[in-house]
Length: 205
Picture 1 (cartoon, helix red, strand yellow):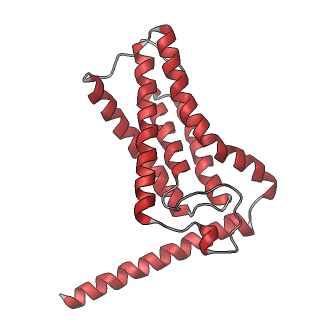
Picture 2 (cartoon, one colour):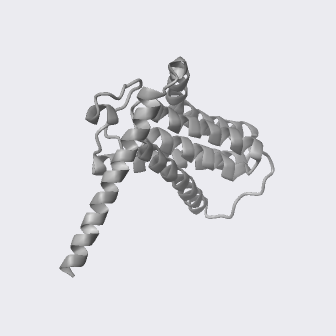
Picture 3 (cartoon, rainbow, N blue to C red):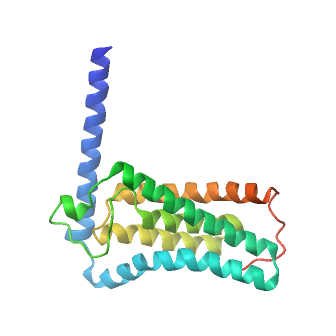
């Protein structure tokens, strides 16, 4: 039994070391070696757009629902807002628990090109962006809504690595949390209203 535990501990330690090594190699390649410097401003804009989009979209949908007296639109906006709240809470809960240093702190060669407060794991930007994209898609299920939404979310996640403030595993985990947050928000919203999904009488998109 003791031998099995030693083997298990060694294996986990080895995998963790390899994962950290892969994380550093990828961020160094994207941030230092092959970073397209002419796109820095663009990626900074995309990264900085996260909060405005994640707040603006549900507020706009709820406002439209109130103005048109459309219960369906109002509930859509509420669900997206709940997803943003769940993703934000889950981000900070894990940040306070894991307390992973930012890549530019651990590796001086990584160039910090954006703001990055708190610990590194997981990426709050990726979490929030994918929570929004998934929520919007779940409510519409149209490819011309899903493609732009997930393209934007993917660019937000990529920008955080390109700008040197997150490791790849930070953004991949954040994206997964964001998708989970959207599904959780859907269940929470239906529980709040204690009813089945409202029939589609109108849609914002």
